[in-house]
Amino acid sequence: MYWLLGNLSGVRWPDVALAVPASALGFMVCVLHMRALDAFSFGTDSTSALGVAVRRVQVVLTGMTTLMTAVMVSLVGSIGFVRLVIPHATRFVVGVRHGALIPASALAGALFLIAADITSRTLIPGQVVPIGGSDSLVGAPGFAIMLIRSEVGHEAVGARPWLESRHSQHCRRRYR
Image 1 (cartoon, rainbow, N blue to C red):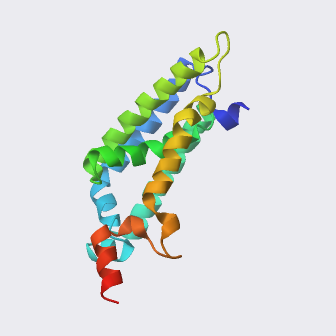
Image 2 (image 1 turned 90 degrees about the vertical axis):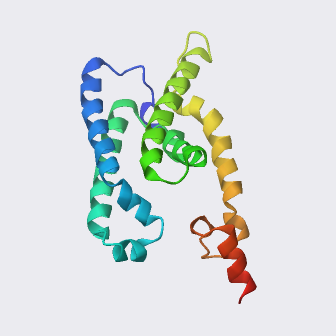
């Protein structure tokens, strides 16, 4: 159960010595690639036309994300809704520019994890509920709201409404 739902109660100071460098390195790599991440919002063809080495950036960011995820999951287990909901909720607050989104997502994720840990320790007196259970109390409804707002179910199969504004969708329908 430990690996499936996550728990911070077993983390000790030697574990922090492993987690901090991994997360700091990952944060710095993301910050160094924030302009490329902004360019990816327009698709890989447009990103390539802007002079970004698309394949190299994809490999570097995927590798760094895999490294950070492996280190954190090996220390605390899987805590799913932090990675699913928090970055998208933060995007609604700070916007799509990665210069603000990356630090805001890191801070919001840390604050959410602290709140989930406190909730998991106080929810049932004398017992520690796994963090994956307590964060799902907020994460599942948040994820459902994001799915409803994305209108994915209302668009034709193959459409990508998250890449198009409502105005461009309206113009595309109107001028067919």
